[in-house]
Image (tube, rainbow, N blue to C red; front, side, top):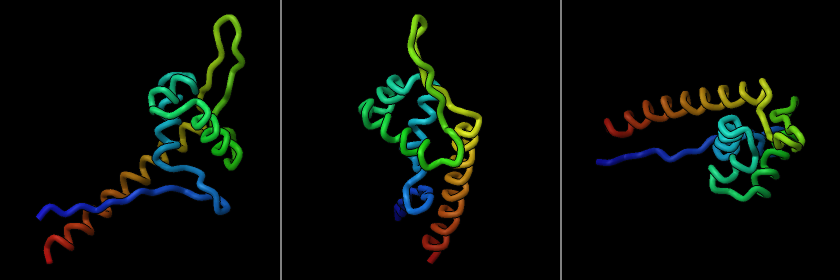
Length: 112
């Protein structure tokens, strides 16, 4: 018997989605590329959608999650704040722990 649990987690603050897998992937892409535009491309979403997602996270967050630098000779960019980096780590840990728990629960179903 091939049995799977399907689940997604997200965090809401004051009834609004704060973080979920999509936003975390976008934050990770920003960390890797140093650019919201490049991060949007690498996660296969439009720049406009990426901008709205990051704007929403920054507005609801208690601290800034990203920092933007204005373009110029060297070009602009987007970077994560230390708080933004800690959110990724916390979310990834939470997600991992959730899956470990669900896998154990699934074993109970399989043994019936």
